[in-house]
Length: 516
Image (tube, rainbow, N blue to C red):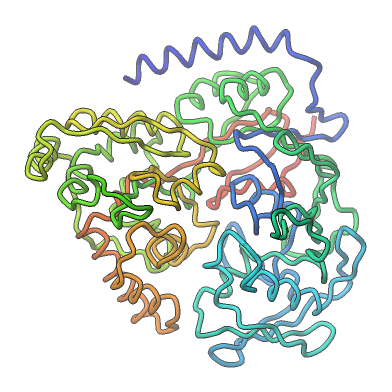
């Protein structure tokens, strides 16, 4: 399989070199201080509160700021828009704020903005896509112009993690002029106005986003950008991305895959980067029958058959590389609270066939596999399951289309890649999919009880024990089949100095052009 795949990739890159000679004049240009990058995701809106994709998360990091920041090397929390923070009691976080900061729209940053932001996104009508990250907020008390008390509904051990990653600040009244459609406010349509190292200069929805450096950026944990202009382009075809990179029209592309990376490493005009990241893949079953009707995956023996049919080690090594590992829990092993002491299911196709026969499917069955995972991963899983009699039809989608299908229960089995929104805690993975959220297709009341306890307990031992019991129940019942951890494979032009990070954020404000 690898030999055939490598030959195809070599052929495609050779074709890319020919086509790149015929390419249009380059948009990426060191001489004009413009870095151009691409991924396969459409940027329809730019606010990650309302469109939670890898692109909006990246835009958030480049354009916005949080009260706290997480150091990408040490992973420690550092004050950002805050200058200090301290838990007054189990549910009150006192935060002193940085003075002299302005939003891109010119508004000064004050305590009023913190109160407005956190109370808007946690409000029942806010419509944010990830309520898990805001439901803990009771309210914000203004102590002074640059000091607030953030009140939690109950002890929230991951509050500082949320405040350093997913909860960016916007100015007071930011969403007030949001347009309406069918009686609902479209908050995500409001242009993003933040305080970060880059500001958005122009948006062509679904096609491109242009950024320019914030000349008034404050001295904080994020450095001031050294590259003046950054442009994002949506290019849905990976081969087309490679063509544009080799032709000099792009400076950076992401998630190009192990084999493409090996081939591109042969070209002097390109450099490649690889690093393990806080992301893992897993199959999730609609075991609760959400959306109505019945499906084969409601049978535990069928789910166990799927688990025994998947060659996790083969997928990890064949598609990702030596730094990827099979996983057995629905969380990343590096996340706080992620227990790996659970029931495991060895790769055993004969046992998978026997379990299918016991479940009443001696000849197997067919179903649709809904997925936003790169196609080569889907094909590997489909091939493994086909070998035991389960015929899956790949329904490849953009994540924005995939998510409502998965949440509604229309999908009976999904293949997921999950980066936990950069949150280094099992509450952002295990709790996200099994704590009666919109993404929960299991709806197990015992899991809900345990994960609620884990999410609201500040005692580390009790918290870890709750997570371990919950993860054990998930594994025993095969509510999901975790597959592998992930590594990121990126490529850039050789004149650009850029590093990969464990949370899969490019941090263009840390990138720089190499000296001649």
